[in-house]
Image 1 (spheres, rainbow, N blue to C red):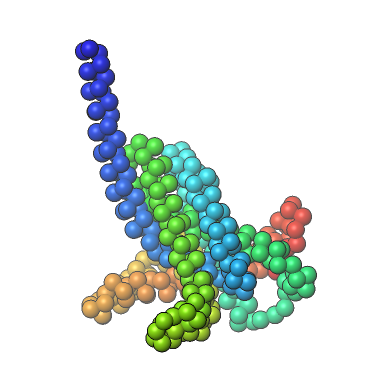
Image 2 (image 1 turned 60 degrees about the vertical axis):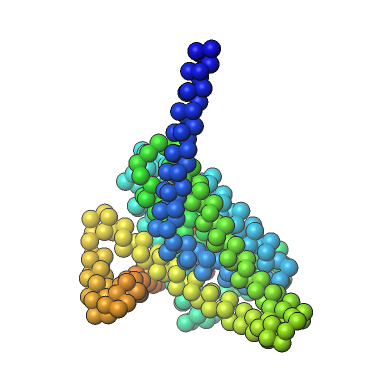
Length: 322
């Protein structure tokens, strides 16, 4: 009997520890998610452009496939990789993040370049001439998941940095909670955005009140403009986030410029507008990060399209990007 009572005491003690651990995990996940909020917003802004131009019936399936790819990025690839690097090669994390930031800068700059200097791409023209919706859909999904990988890496790294030093299982569970919650938030929001025109159509046709029907017609008329706006925001977000990763990484590695100059400019601008100091400091920092991200991205276009792309195509058997 005494042995049974001792066992019950042990079980009770374990339960108390587990309950405390759950509270710690929840607190850590909330803090980590809040710190990663800026990148989450960028992720939500980037994604809608990948479903633009497809039939309405394909929008949610495409978003679902991208969301599954995002979960795979976070839970299967990035989570164990982040824990391993943090434990054994912590000095490698910053350079890897900077490499990802450079990719975002390149992708954003390439889109800006095409807007400013529109020109036909023979391979893109060939793709559209083939008129294969399945091929185009696969290309969009693949591009979205690759972009998500970079943003997810930043999210998971920020989250890991906010978790107090603890057992590896607690860090893993906290990162998993953050990854799942953020994926649901981002792609749930994106799904709602891209289907808003269908909701508007439903309200316009079946709304019982004139105001409801008018609101529905307004949604239908406004959604294409909103999607176009979000596409632009997504491109700017790539430059902002990419530039921020590079500049912050340089500071971490001991190259304190241009981070120091940008910080001083932002603080000075915020001091001039005390009523909105936080917003002004953020805006100045984001603008400077984005400009430098654009400069870096433009400088990478020849390297990516003329050197890296052709060499990668030889190994993959695919056409090089232009």
